[in-house]
Image: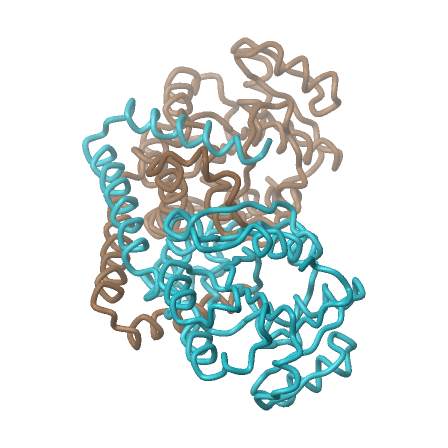
Length: 284
Length: 284
């Protein structure tokens, strides 16, 4: 099987990401159907030409005719959905997802899944501070990373299909990481930064500071506008990796605190030089 | 005295901020001279029509003819400069600055200064990740805050002149804060955020992460490119206020760490809702 326009592609979950996938793939001429419990989301996607067909029910014909199924659900709903409905999958179907954490779900799904169906995990590192299919926007993928997260039990063919989805959606960079390395990286670059942004907003009564915030504070807190249901679930599912990253950060922050307290200017400058040099690599 | 085009305005220190002041004021038709120890900076400003005259020396005629002097020097150089050269000031001259910390310098300068000259402190909250007069750019003031930082010994007239400089340069918002409140605010919105950005870059060997960094990590570390000489000095000069803000942040971050460790989803969600609501105020 290859990603081509004869495939029946089913998207389960028409939120911001599911909707943006539908928009991007449908634009390119792929046959897209969708299932979402919210009938209004399905209607919106249909009326905005993001999908060819859709249902708010567990529609057996949509599911059993799908060659490729993309799950864009909250992790716990995703796991339940698979358990309850996998008997409907077409034999030979490839299943992928958009979940932001991997170790905790990939092995469980692969273990539970029918052996004639393959699950290959993917993480599109894209988002917005808003949600819902009404905010779907496939341009969010343009500057973003798409990570395929295979395990030893995945086939070359499924990995290639999964990569092709990222390419078709126009991601800036497609790469591949094993689940554990993926979760450590996400714990650091995404979840730790969200924890910091949240704490910057909650640690002080900041209402009166709005008037004085410059770009620095605005930049560091942009992501403090956060979907609390999704992110608390993602944090818990990646708890160990995130706690470890938080500990590493706290230890470094505390070290810097001590340098300042002891007026160790030279060591503070060394830290600043190191941060400047490392950050400069991002702007190349 | 009012800020008008007959005044002789002297800028001491042609770095990024001094140069941007010169550019902005000269464009509007003000008579600008400048002193900088670096002859190339003076030449650059002259050849780019940012100043009318300039010198790399302690030029007595430039200093003694100045009605308004704006210091854009590192804090410790600024203090020394005043001590050594204040005998050259014109009687009745108004002196201001651009220094990012206040309590530690304002009272000392006002105490040492000749009684026929007035120092009124100001803090333009603007900058760039680059420096030097070659990067001067008065458009950095457009979205920025300008804070006048008067003490009980300042006159209404000097405060008004100081505000008029900010207005002329086109700052988005002009406000006024006493030194202590200013330094606490700066410790929080500016210095704490720089400490966090630095530690995010130094806490992990992040070279291999460049490939995976999304917008979140980029946003939180943009200011990790930092002028280590200037910022280490500013941190030390505001040490007590900054240490206090770092403690408040660490305590909040540690609380969030414990919530995650104990899987207290409801309290994590509460924090996220609070951060979302507070951050939303910034985007109004």
